[in-house]
Image 1 (cartoon, rainbow, N blue to C red):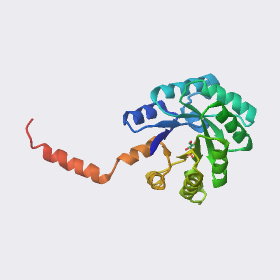
Image 2 (cartoon, rainbow, N blue to C red):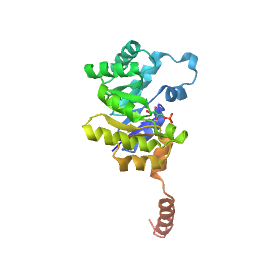
Image 3 (cartoon, rainbow, N blue to C red):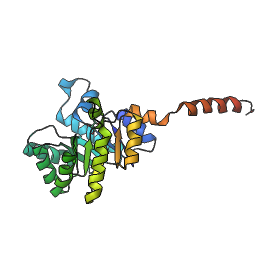
Image 4 (cartoon, helix red, strand yellow):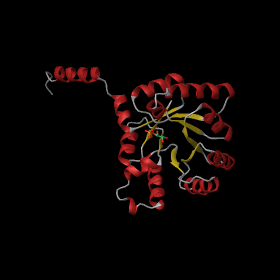
Length: 222
Ligand code: E4P
């Protein structure tokens, strides 16, 4: 199972990379907005520079999302983003135009991540269009009292049934239990916010055990 970090924050990406368990990065326009100090000074070129800097930190897929709605515009934008670095994956929304763009990128050998996926049929379409990754948003489904992980289970089963190569990225992860469930279902990847990555590490019994070991070790003279 691969771990991606779901952030555009360079410090968080560096910290997660230092742990040695990071396989890639996902960003979206909202995550980019969080790292922008003064929006009036942040240009599209700044965005591209930021994605390129992420690619220098992590040697794995880095999803950069298109911000157009029409297929032609998505294609132009995605080709521009893909040219930044070989690890850039173009993130396209699961819409009619998004599917057309995904099909185009697939024919050109440009990797894509179908995003904003909330139903099994959307995931099926993403795979058929040739998406390399599909991102079901589990937390946002949970937020509206719908079982997000049940969607992941359906997608994993459907892809296995037909041998689709599209990798399932569990997205909109909110807590460690989402990660455990993803692994049990055989999802390929979980993209995890930095705060949740830190939660995966900690356990109160680890802390208590370590405190005791440190106390007992202090009897030894160095
Ligand atoms: C990642 O690809 C998604 O854009 C992200 O996980 C969405 O997370 P959110 O629902 O917490 O905004």
